[in-house]
Picture 1 (cartoon, one colour):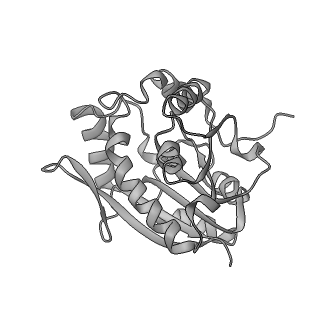
Picture 2 (tube, rainbow, N blue to C red):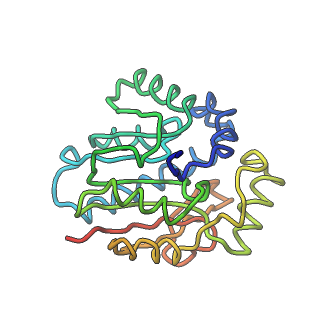
Picture 3 (cartoon, rainbow, N blue to C red):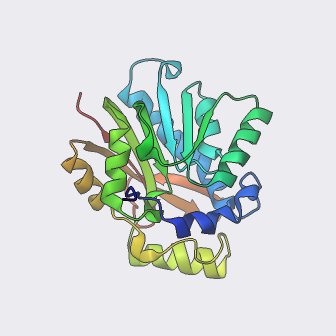
Length: 238
């Protein structure tokens, strides 16, 4: 019997066709390049709030790492980084870029549920809206955490505003991302992630919005506006 997986093959095929362009800041992953500094600001703060040891003492798993944008930023913070993705093309790009950047990152092509190791921190950024089963995916993430671990996710909220900006504007008007990148019905509300996480003894700690400022052509964090993009951190039992 075939092992159940949260990976959606159609999603992998969709992203794999552009995998060679992961590090093109004006290419199909341009929005992620713009998002990355703000995401890393949030991740760094959440880890610092949760752990009282140096980052070099922590190991971190980047699920759905793609071409390594987040993994490399984490490695530059001196963390021990493992990146995993089901897209073999993206993993090849990630490995080559890390080598050229002289960064020591362990990249794996595969499914996170097949890993044996547990990590101090697990991040899954812009991934959960592309999986087959949201609750199962959260369970996979939690199973990779040490008992006192920290899980950080980012995704798109399922609201009328996210449909207007995340799909109509981003895909059809501004052409920031290729058409078909997102399916609005697969967007996830913060309350849904929190509810599923609680079932597996993980406690929601923080939810922060990600807002795009067209005047500055940049993203910033918001404590109040969660209508489109948001980050959420969840903590294991201490």
